Image 1 (cartoon, rainbow, N blue to C red):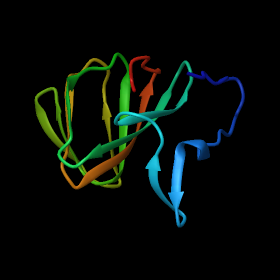
Image 2: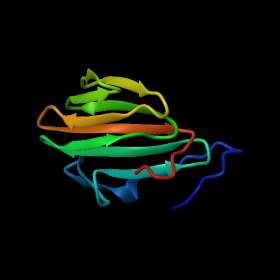
Image 3: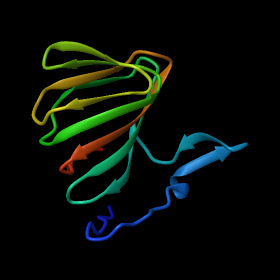
Length: 122
């Protein structure tokens, strides 16, 4: 894993992670439901792909997590409370709060940020 220098602004290419067909993104390269895109000491950014009816079991993070859904819809259970995150919406999950995620549509694509960076995700 590369940890980027936070003392200066940097643009990083993600093109090596993306497979395109006719100009459309058809696949992100990488195994699992998430692919870490950038990682610094203070923030980790991951692209999350959940197929239809996928479920992430209850878990916690030691850092704040922000999930922005750009395609599909997520159903989340956050500390026992049901929450829906629709396409073009985002949610902030505080550190150390148990939560689980279910893909409530034909599949979900989202960007996830953890601040400070959570070494175990994804």
